Amino acid sequence: MVDELLRLKAIPQSARTLTRDHVFNGIPMKKGETVLLSYQAATRSDETFGDAAEAKFDRKETWTSAFGLGPHRCLGIHLARQELRVVLELLITLVPPFRLAPGATSRWETISLWGPDRLDLEFARG
Image (cartoon, rainbow, N blue to C red):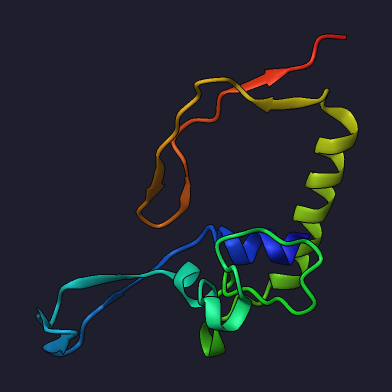
């Protein structure tokens, strides 16, 4: 479940400073400019995942780029995944049942981290 959630909503983004002028898909970019690389885009291919925009916790194969790729892959990936698993278990165990509040809206922000600007929840009354 953790890997599927991270595949769907990778939290970190990576910025790089261009070391030379470059044209990408007809867009000129100049040396010294900063470009934002979306790790999330790497795992959104329907060809690779089929229904890539949908969370499927029974997916046979899943992988995430949320912790970077190749030589830039985070060394703490295994600890971070374990911490996320513990947090989700505690959330389910200790927090009363909840749902997104009716009419709630949020905007997903991205600069260096990806996440909602607000999360309006409604808790079940017991």
